[in-house]
Every structure is written in C-alpha cells, then in structure tokens.
Amino acid sequence: MRYILVSVFLSLLLIKLTSAQEIIQQKEVDESKGKSEKIDTLSNSFLSFSIGFGYRTAQVSKNLNSSDRSFAEKGRLGIVFHGSFAHYISDNLGLSLTFSNYRSENSEQDRSVTTSYYFIGPGVSARNRNNKHSIFYVSAHLGYVGFKSEEYYNSQDYTFTGATIGLDGSLGIDFLLSNSLSFQVDFGYTNAFLLRVKDEEGQTHTLGEAESLNRIDFKVGFKIYL
Image 1 (cartoon, rainbow, N blue to C red):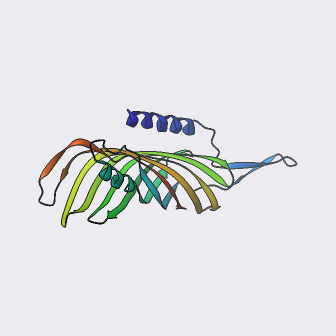
Image 2 (tube, helix red, strand yellow):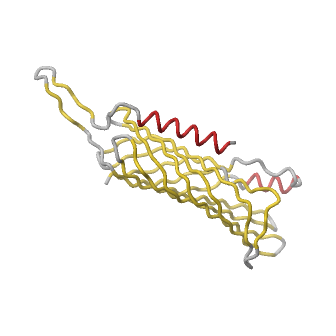
Image 3 (cartoon, rainbow, N blue to C red):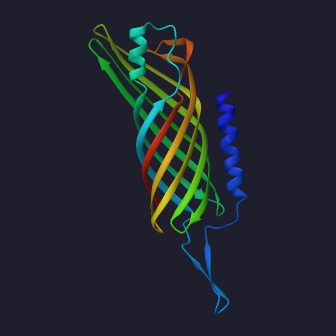
C-alpha cells in the first residue's frame, strides 16, 4: 500500500510540472522598445552528485527480545551516496538514470552488523523554474536493489546477500551558482522489500518476515549542466 501511495504522489507531481507553463527560458520585456530578450537558458542534460544521511523507516520486529530490538534500532541511520544523469526531452520533462548506495554500521561488545544496499534504475525527472536563482525538481525511478549484510555474532562471521526490485523517488531544489553549476538540497525515499537471501556458501534462505529496505534520505550536493 505504501508503495502505491508513493507512486501516485510522485506521478501527480510529475503531471503538474509537465503541464506547467514553459519557464526554463525566461524573458525580460523592454517596455520602451517593445522587444523581449531570453536569459538564463539551462542545458538539456545534467550530472548530479550528492551525499547525506538515510534513515530506515520500517518497524523493528516484535519477535526480537528487548536487547536485540535496542541493537536493531541503533542501526537505522546510515550514510547515503547518490548520483544521477538526466536528459530533458522538453523544457520540463526528462528521462533519467539514478544510483544510490546506503551503508550503516552498528556494533557493541560481541556483535556487529554492517548493512549496505544500492539502487540503480531508469525513470523520469521533471523541473520547474521558480525564479532566475532556483529550480524545483522531482523524479521517480524503478530499478534493481542489491543487498549485503556482514554480521558478527559470538566469534562467528556471517555474510548474507540478496536482490529485489524497488522504487526510488526524489524531491528537491537547485540553487543556481551559474548556468553550468547548481547546489542542490534533496529529500529522497526508497521503497523495497527483501524476501530471500543467500549465505556465504550460496544457500538460499526464505525470510519468515520480509526485510523492509524502506528509508528516507536527506542529501546535499552539486549538479553539473552539460
């Protein structure tokens, strides 16, 4: 249900932006001469790179004891790296490819867990220029999620890997530093569920309770217009 609601929300935002008035190329009217002049035309393509924090939103399993629940809660927060490329086929709507990687580490006494998973996939991106200094944008992507968990318990090491399909969405604003560079502030959401994992020996284990990889992100970075 959450996956559907997120998809609908992002779709509505994209429709709103693509139907907006074309304002990527703004005009200044010279009233005295009755002429217009184009200013601040943006490139149709860009690369973006950002870093920030990700917080896993799923509830910790009620089947865990209090000690394990406390340990799992501390492992929610991690570091996120994000990169994307987009090419706009119109002033407001573009096709894009995005990649993100989340990693968290948690340890105490005789146990530790390092969890990482990445998303890569194609999608759509839309933008709306607020004024000559800032641009509002939104994107939605569907793609592949690769998961890895390295665990240490009672002097034993364990490694589990898995894969699934997920949704990645972003909502943010660019502050233009020039026609070729902007500083971006971004809020993101990843939605995915893991049903099976493989151990280091290649054996597949079906999880009794699906592992939620849902998380929210806050990132800052730069966008380069090509």
